[in-house]
Amino acid sequence: MIQLSKILCPTDYSDTSDKAVRYAIEFARRVNAHVRFLHIQEPDMSIVRKSMDEENPLSESFTKMLMAEKKKGLMADVKVVHGVPTDAIIKHAHDWFADLIIMGSHGRSGLMRIMMGSVAEAVFRSAAIPVLLVKQDAVDKAIPG
Image 1 (cartoon, rainbow, N blue to C red):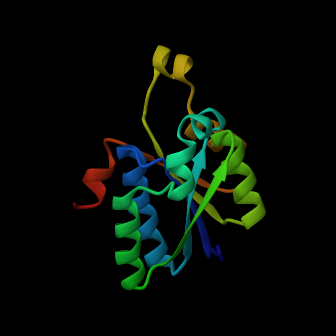
Image 2 (image 1 turned 120 degrees about the vertical axis):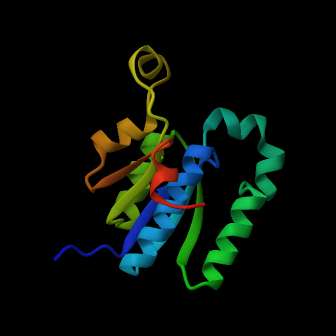
């Protein structure tokens, strides 16, 4: 029997990431799992936005949504770490003993993917646990508003 008790959901508050958050919430509810939302502050961003991020690196809309979901019984927390996103996600999944990673994927292909890289693809290839990639354009079909 597969035991899914800890779900890690990296978020950068983008539209793609927000859709993966919705998937993680619903998935966690259905399997009665704890979901941890992981926000990574990249080294160069930490310097530029240091004063703003030191107070509260979480978006206001994300905080409100999370509080509402927790009131409905969702077991969840948020962790903010500094580092390179792929490395931070893999390390945190290992250190926290996550059973599953759910994250958004922009779905870029061809030259755009080669030029910009893909954190989601790198995590998918490197993680020792299953990774569920939520495509930006596929989510609305699966989860109503």
